Image 1 (cartoon, rainbow, N blue to C red):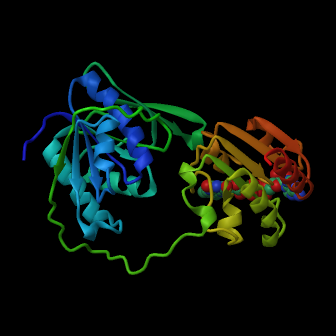
Image 2 (cartoon, protein in one colour):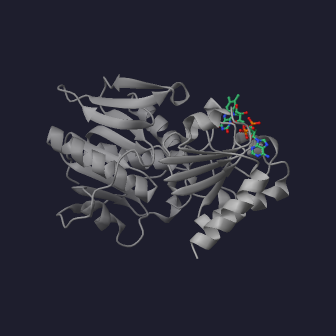
Image 3 (cartoon, rainbow, N blue to C red):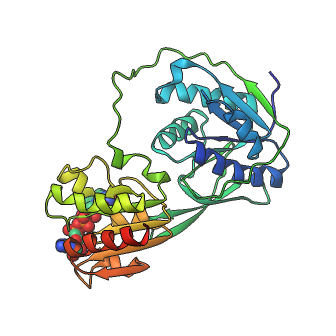
Length: 321
Ligand SMILES: Cc1cc2nc3c(=O)[nH]c(=O)nc-3n(C[C@H](O)[C@H](O)[C@H](O)COP(=O)(O)OP(=O)(O)OC[C@H]3O[C@@H](n4cnc5c(N)ncnc54)[C@H](O)[C@@H]3O)c2cc1C
């Protein structure tokens, strides 16, 4: 196996984030004058080639049915093996739930640091990775520099735009990894409820806050979601306290970046705002004129959601007919 020196190595189990990492990785690799390597595990048809088309010079492929379910230890072994082969100076990992757990383990094994959830990346004159990331619930931006190689960063969904695919030459290399018996086994997997899936990738989200008085009233939100083709989200109390949904949006939940976010009966606390601030357009429906959410909404409807939602759904249905 040929060993490459000083590369940029990118990995995410989320295909879209992977393509976005490759765009930034390509820019960094060109700036430093090194190869861009991508790691992919159990790719479906055509995927390694697609990574080349989106900027990778080399794609390391691990094809192993035992890796079907994510367990952090085997995945850590796989990334470390790719690091061993690619000898990267810079490692970029998608900041999904799994990616964040994995990045921490890999950084620890490599005795290096990791700048997390970076929305801007560059290299300085000494080839060190520079990052910008949000801190204090998104109210400040931290500018950080990594001092130790390999420099590591995790990157959230939509921090960077993927490149247009192009016909490029690239190498696809299959690697075998010795997976020792993991200390944790998956005993059961269950599908999530429809509303909770892929919130990070959703381009339209309608979300519920405590302005909803009863679980059955969520049907008003579901009707609006159906017309808009939206995913459904909520604030933490709706999920964690009331148990009406499984997962929530915010600093301790999903961080989303849809084109349109419609907050219904949501007050807009800093903990919730931290999860939605990358939304392109925020629309709020709240009966309190002084509610926080209006302060960072692009469009505010001051009104009772029990009146506004059915009217909005009806109007949109007619408009989109
Ligand atoms: C460590 C920590 C982490 C947290 N992490 C998160 C997180 O990740 N995400 C998160 O969301 N929260 C999080 N929270 C909780 C957070 O502090 C707030 O409690 C929560 O965001 C408030 O949720 P809400 O907007 O649904 O409820 P509320 O703050 O009660 O707001 C309800 C809103 O609905 C409006 N309303 C009421 N009736 C109507 C009506 N009929 N029509 C229209 N509007 C109406 C009210 O005016 C009000 O503004 C966290 C808290 C802590 C301590």
